[in-house]
Image 1 (tube, each protein chain N blue to C red):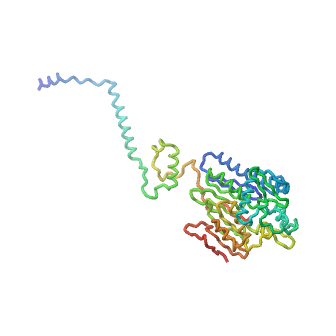
Image 2: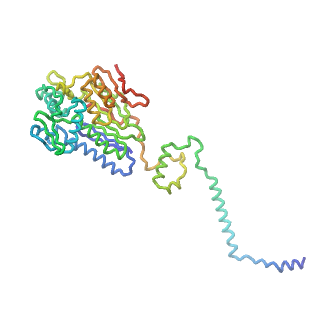
Image 3: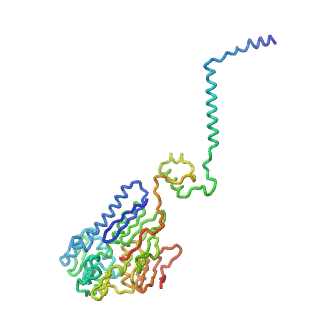
Length: 320
Length: 110
């Protein structure tokens, strides 16, 4: 039987689908309860929009020396710093101050598409993640006074991965948090069909991906955008410039083994652009769909996992 | 003849008239035999549960499900297993496989 649970968390819609043949339905219900509670717990701990969260307390203590953090915050922070290292600093969990200076200083829904907060002129921040000091024995974190953490790029994917792997012993499972999704297992070998949102016409779907033991995530500059004076800004910061990325890409969907990896890769490729982005995916064995600002779409790797068809080394121009 | 008859008659014990109780057993035997015959005839007249054509065969899923049920019930259940026929359409208590006729969810930009 396919069990389903839907709820709101992390300011998005979350869905969990679990196929279980166990007659113990109470155990399945408990597992889904746990999944929902775990999403809420991570949000409580790691949201930058909650003043009482562990992340907010750590940011408020920047410049005050070593702070002991929870195991959850420690785990996600070290994963984020690892991702920063792997991406050459293009992904960086320490860009919160730059985001705030650009006006993204509160939940996006309350900005109403415009913000004049901050001075609007953050400088380049490439490599700032290296200034975070960790003490793994004491589980403490030291932040410089001008640095603050934001896990917006990985916390959701990390949670999706964790829930999917936790529920997997009960049966094939699919976890979807606002489009960051991961499938573990398949029902009688039948992959999970996932529609791919059209990047330029969000109400339409452009294709269907059949997902099996893999994850998908999409990053786009079309969602969280706002006006600041006569400038249009978005939430994906290029640390090389310290402002909203200005590549030739509008949206990137990445298929990777895990949701956090897919989420990070989608952001990195979107910042890199269509020239350097495909190599980043290919080097890691990921696949992707890159939609350019001019409407062209590039497929990198075996995004659709079609049997007998391999285009891991080719870019397929499927539009325009 | 007379003598022989007389000898025969003298060597053969006189036939004793059946007792009223013994006479009462014959109708019971008749009823038993008739019942047995009817049972055998009825059994032979029953249709055999043997698939006759390819279309009569159960789907692999049904066969697998039936096998799973008997395996779960243990070896004794396996001995009593009846041939799986096309009459086996559903097995109560087994979960239904979802049919993905449409995407279950969709990617969304973030």
